[in-house]
Image (tube, rainbow, N blue to C red; front, side):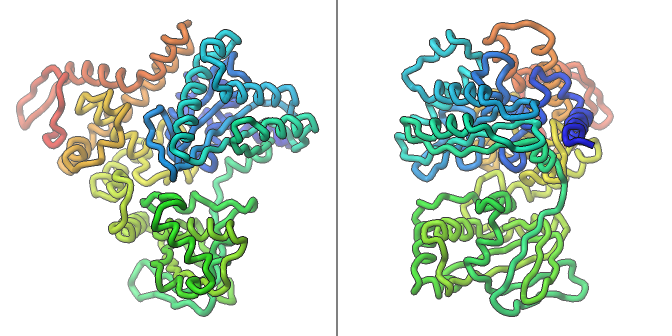
Amino acid sequence: MSLKILLDDQIEKLFEDNPELATVNKNKFEIAVSAFSNLHYLYGIEFDDLIDGIMGEGGDEGIDHCYIFCNGVLVKDENHPINKESHIKVKFFQTKKESGFSANGFKNLKEGIEEIFNLELGLDKLQQIGANQDILDTADLIRKIFRKSSRERAKFTCEVYYVTAAPDINIPEKISHLQEELEKNNLNIPFEFEYWGAQKLLDLTERVDESIELKFSSQPLEIKERGVDISGFTGFISGNDLITALKDENGEFKSHLTEGNVRFFLGEDKKINSSIIESAKDPDKAQNFWAMNNGLTIIGDSIEPLGNNEYSVVNPQIVNGCQTVHCLYYAQIEIESLPDALKVFVKLVNTENLEVQTDIISATNSQNPVKSASLKANDNIQRNIEKYLKEVGIYYERRENYYKRQGYTGNKVIGLLKMAQIIHTVVNKESVVAINDASTLFESQGKYDIIFHDNADYDIYKFASVLYQKIWSIKNSDIRSNTYSDKERSLISKGGFVFLHIMSSLMMSRALYKFGNTETSSEQTTRIDITAPA
């Protein structure tokens, strides 16, 4: 059986598992590539953001999809906060279901990228030469973010992915030449290139356990008590051995291993991180590194001894020590090898219990500055919503990428921030705030309680989620079935939460509510008290 057939089977399965994709007016292969690459290359972004990143048919200037990230967070508008510690990554994809890599195809991609970074080429001129509205909007945002990054002296890089269904990776010399030309751009933007064929895409669809092998410098202390569900090992690991174990085959740090850590890596230029890096590079200070640093906590579904003080950790998560491990990685890059005397205190925790894992994550990060939404993931209300929605086929990712890692895709996977946007729209009638200021919904307990409250009826979360899914399909079907101008199409495409606001108000205004033995109905155009279920 050929690779092409196996790949086609995976694409068909994606669309069978997510029937709402039939309503999306985008290329089927491009949708599949975005979905397959999401977890490992696009930080597990929300599905509608994934689809929005696919450029429209015709006028895409060789760019089939494009995503902009700042420190791993999707950039949606020019107001995204950027400072000198920020790292902006623009990811360009050319995706063709062809049996090889075309020099002409890559040339179109190269020219499209060059048009975007030709800051003197006005958007009106770009439109005149055939660019569609998606490309115009994307070009405008990239240019604004690039200029903002330059002003703030933030790091700005680009990644280019050329994806086909080729059985072998044979890159024509012409493409290599075009790649070199793009690397020598006048703006001195660093570029990285990857070429994917059918095998790479198949590999991305695999749902296999990940494991790392860690070797302690001496016999670690085993922690195991009779009648206690969790166990583990603790001891010292050489800094070089630790970083080597946490890098992939290309020498890149496996950043996804830190997703269980609710504290965001603040960047190597922060004062505290600069101190860690300098200590790691200094041979004298390195020997005391373990005493000056809290070390790492790593959770695994299972931990198996391999002999000679080495252990295999299955499905590892670094839940504490994100700062430390990133700093050691950067320090090793700068000096190639860390001092031999540098040791890191590492605690391995063996548990498959999700509740225990989230308790550990919360406890090990409670003293750190964190993203305000992240610690809320461990609240009882969040756990209860997850359990309730799972029974109706909605996978609520209160913990980032938890279900995506298990192979769940599409609109049935809803993240914590997305749920807050949905409920703020339906319950509090604040669709505009939900769209533009979603992160503020977690900044105070008062805001949080009008969205997530222990007294809430979980049916409101189910109703709002299902309605959101239906509206997403309806608006995409409308775009697919009718002819609109670019501006009309863009307005409809971006109007999901506004439509959700209107539709939920109309539907709930026609509904009967029961308070005790009293039934009533009323217009639902104002905020609903989520603490008084009806």
